[in-house]
Length: 174
Picture (cartoon, rainbow, N blue to C red):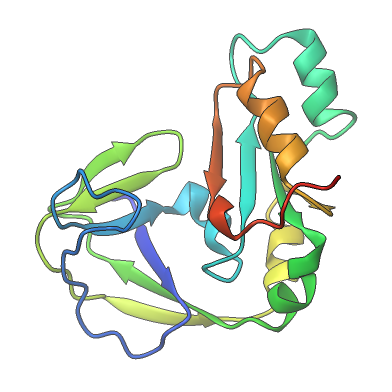
């Protein structure tokens, strides 16, 4: 049975009710969850802009060198260095949700959705997020701005990536 999670900076959520997501207004109200394999993409404060990308089939050798360099990690998460202190001090709550009634929404990101309310089966308070990320096997990169990476990925042969909360990113550097 696959595990599904919802992350929040709020404790004490008893029921997740379907709602329309601000950046997905074309969808009906749903409850969102992420799978265990990609839960690390939410081990930062909710509003933290970040880009996560994975090695992908069909990626050119040039893009392999350009985006992965010498790392052996299967994925890279890039966050803006201005968020470092907030990541270090953040506490998150990981709500485990029953998988029944969820349907896969996005295979790359690991998202599933449910059209019915969900009662969490457990909740875990998470701190030490940088340590968790470091131990997860992904590579964490800090950068002053995500804009150059975003533009480079959009024009690349990398097909497995996610751009999260980009509206909160710092303005492009001059």
